[in-house]
Image (cartoon, rainbow, N blue to C red):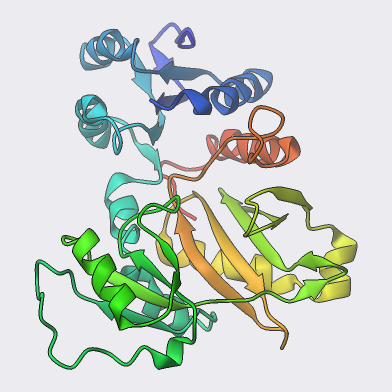
Length: 311
């Protein structure tokens, strides 16, 4: 994917870096959305990285905004990220904020203080920090089964979903000795017209798009319609996403929220970053294509706002 041609002064509205091939459909959609709005996007992938970095450092190209989807998974992109911190005025999902919120415990109490419901949670230190805990925490309030998650991580990595007692916790601690673990109550969603009331809520530059999502199959349903929002009283999906954005201070993420039988909305997965931007029909587990279009449009519209990104 070729970078956009900069203006006569080398200016480019948005620099996007990526290293995951499955990002290419969304990046292409973003480029086209920007083009229609009269905006330019420079795309940097693994093959174009060396030449792009040389042109940026030489001042031949001057991006005004930066969206990074590579530096955290490919160290080769770190010099680009470091250069961008000093030379690009607007950052979507700035690196420092991103890495702060990856630790789930950095968000947990802030969400509760903000009035959001979260699953009952216990935090267990890494095996490397304390292999013997003395009297171990009482896990009975979590119920059975409960989940075990690394404090840092996403995409299901290292997650145990069928833990039942402290022995399972000890096995997880030994399997991930360098990771603090969070033990989380299992949340069973209500059934609304035969659908599991589990939602993946996308936040993009102030735009909030909740989708029905099946936590068992990991497949998307439709977006939550205005009629469904009113009928089921789902305003809290929008409220939760806006509250999380204010706490996380990033502009592009998704959250998982479940509605339980008593009507409460439980924020189960606080912030997914980097957000999975795959969409149908390119990926079976991708979001509806209209959601991808809304996200791309929100990013492009944000390019005209102010000097620096912020929710």
